[in-house]
Image 1 (cartoon, rainbow, N blue to C red):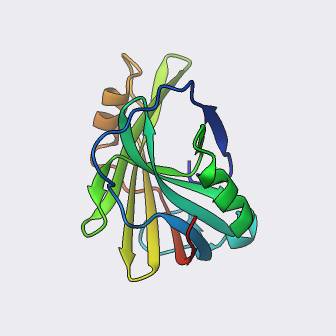
Image 2 (cartoon, rainbow, N blue to C red; image 1 turned 90 degrees about the vertical axis):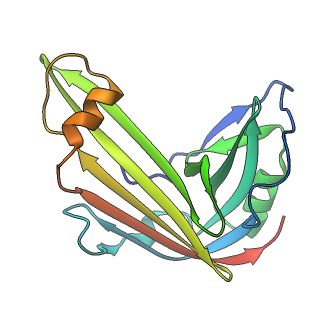
Length: 182
């Protein structure tokens, strides 16, 4: 649930991207990852460093997919790789973090739930991600809560209901510093 930047999936657009309004964020650019921690036991404190397991850079770019705008965070190998991926307007590189709500001043948020069944019982998880910024630094906190086992329909809504009141199960924190524009 917490290795968001490991799998970068490219979605090729079919020339139907629409422009809607002005820019949502001033955070666009390439960032160098300073720290990356992961606590798989709780959300009480940051965990051990897992920086060596991840790409050392990411870029932030406002994307538009079929009229829906979001702030995309996608990993890359170095500054040149980030700039090339961000400059490819025909492809949205998904796999990091995507934020549809928020602002630079209040922070960007993402909320999702998944549900799955096995042997007549359902399980699920709820993920909340917050990206905040100060000066030229961003901080991304991803918290995951596992649902209690439940029966019935294995839907996201049911997983959220079963996760209510459960302790936060894992905390991943990434900090990075602005390095270059596109």
